[in-house]
Image (cartoon, rainbow, N blue to C red):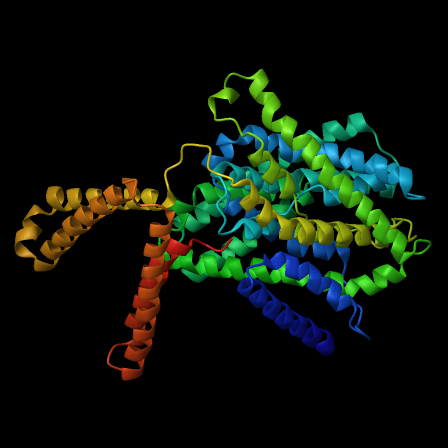
Length: 535
């Protein structure tokens, strides 16, 4: 046990070094993870790690889904609900069905139920992969929202397809009519359980005297609680986690009211999700030699061939679906025509951004080892192997080429959206104005008697004047993207210098560590306004 734990920690350390290298050369880190997973399988005498498939599903999927829901903007999600739904439900069922019939037709011994199982596994693209590849690139807000929203909901719909297909394989019976009715019941009741559980957790966070550490711990527990409760009643744990996560995200400003709580949670979740992504690829690396040995009648070359064929079909199906889904609703609905046309560039990026990732891998690894009668699960190793090939092809090939496509087609914003810097300054102006109004209305006497309150008013007035000038500058046509970027770089350089100065201040031992940490937190918050959260 000690040897295995040391091995996993060593591999995790190496993967982190690879991620740092990916950051250095500006390549999306999920691409390095899948390459690292493949590389681990080639290490001679690598021990095989045996984990309960159900345990893999339970440990990894709830937090991955919850985190995706947490960072989904409900307003944006609802605005683009039609294209998101067409991709998240329509494309998942379309992909699963075509993959099911195609795979069962050319893979010897592959049944239709196994085909649907494979289709359910590889149909959902990975939000983390797409977001990491697109980070720092000029991509329209609509495209990002649709990709994130699709990835959130299609995880849920594809995992429900996977569960039904798994039941069909295990029991040997399947009725489309019965499955359709069960789908809506299982999904609908999963949403009910998720919302009910989220309301309870909301009340705990809101009305009990929690601390930042307890709040963070409770948010880690929440997806597991929602998932397990829903599954206990044979409803969709996935839909429970997604709906509960969306609710908690929407009400987060009421629940987590202190900056320290939010900063703490950001650190906890960013670290946890990153480690989970890395661990899943370590697990596949440790499992690959055994999976290859267990291919049975299939050779490695045949497994790779099947994986490549499925990859091409998967990529082609996304193109076949995305373009009609983007334009046909505009022909049928006057309301849909109110928004600017997506043209051909946006759908091209959405089509090519369908990279598969950690959710597909964790789902494949969760396939049971044996049937209910004790016999080995049919073609399990082949399904896991094909899944890895599809992830490898889509992540490495599409992930590396997507930035060049975006630059090549000169993708531009098509919707009327205020620039990010302008939005920040507008919000700051609103907040400072309401603060100044409170001082003038409620604390007029304190302004005369209390120098600190009077000083606060002067600061607010100065800040409001400065913000108005910055807004005027941003609205001016001479201020382009390069100038704003240069302004951000100047600020980041100032914050870095101030952080070094705080280190010098700490060595002088004149100020307390607690006050220095508060100053560091303020610098972190200022930097966060520019860099944003790491999704």
